[in-house]
Length: 444
Image (cartoon, rainbow, N blue to C red; front, top):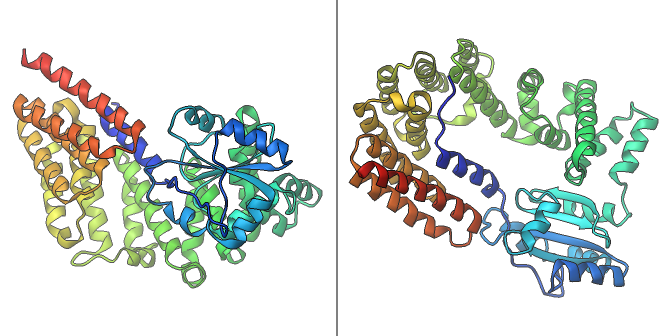
């Protein structure tokens, strides 16, 4: 049976994926940093052609928070400003405003920050998604300007000698920004090539020669979730030498193991596959040292995992709502100070997704209680909207239309706080209006 997903929740999750990476629109006009051109994209291209320079475009959204650091601490540096002002016409574009929306689409801007190096004829030379430090930005700029080895040049070196691991490392580090600039079948072709190269590279260096910051970056960028067998191989590879990884990179590899193992367990439990238990057992055995980074009090990582994933399996496999509610109440009690608002919200959402219309009145009352607890502790607008809508949905099923309307209206009012996020705001408001319209029909 297909899991029911509420349209509004899906919209919000998609928006959150974009929100995770955002960038402020303010640039530097000072003499020490990058001097940004004040004009349109077309005018900047004309100026770039006139001055025989490339175009550097910083695609941003005015609602960004996580990536303000790049604009404040990277673009303003003297070394960066000197190089960029000499070699590029630099432009900042609000990617969600007017004609810029279409321009951003043309360069496949899907998250922020995204910076692109573009030739005067409009062709993308490289498109880089994600925050970059000074050295990373300077390297990307020098490649675009022809002063550093380009991806294509490295690939030719690799073809000439496919045993040179240093060349392969440089190639894989540059792969994401190169892929971002590719389109259609050409992009698909390069993805296939680079995935094969990546796996061969890992196999050639494993296990000990991979333990460095650059190779950890490559793993994070290129491992993906599609090939679960290879991801499991990578998790075990890191885990087998976790002490060495921790000394070199810090705690990040341990968190990588924990997150991946939890995802595997959750996917299996939701699919009703009893093999989820294998991943739960790894928490106290194979991956015990990695799970120490979780830092729980009053409950062990294994106890937490067993309680949660057993409850999840029972709900999705057996549709045992009563058993799930009882198990989750036990889970909440044992977790105590370790609980976050998202734990209550996720518990309520799983009720909707696994049981949907089969939920009884008492189940909706439980879902309301959990969602209200999540709401009381949550400050993030997107999550608050989600919880309000979930509560409204439950009151609607309880035929308490007045309460349902109250929460839908609260959710709509909450979206007004997204005044600088026009696209997410419009999508959420549209979904809420549709729910209010449905409510009007039910009330007649």
